[in-house]
Length: 176
Image (cartoon, rainbow, N blue to C red):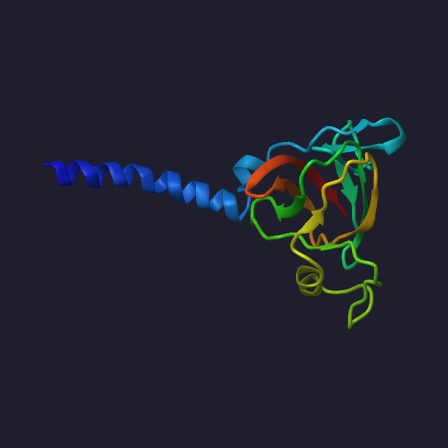
């Protein structure tokens, strides 16, 4: 009888563990929600707050995070510091509904593609980095200028983490 109770107890835990593992690999459509609010942050500018950072999604209608992109081209997105970062932070992005990873190009070298521009969706999905690191700093500020390699319109979620802990997230609506 105890064996049956233990098996039934494990059966109840398995769906919860699977859901947690799915969230760790990327947010599901159910947790993406509505686009984040956009506000003005003084000298840092207008954008969506992401913990100690502001992501400059200032194309928004109705005060929400929205970014216009052109299919086949990287999307320029400026990220600015608005507070001290007490630990190293990592930014990752996911396409809502598919959990496919967003790639970033915030390097000190030109972004090029073998086929030129416009490029293919497949090239945008493979180029760049799966995460972006922001080192800890005692200074407020810093401007990070680069590209997010969106390949399709829809909602996208950015997660900022310190080690395994999620610090903040924003949802942006990407429109063509």
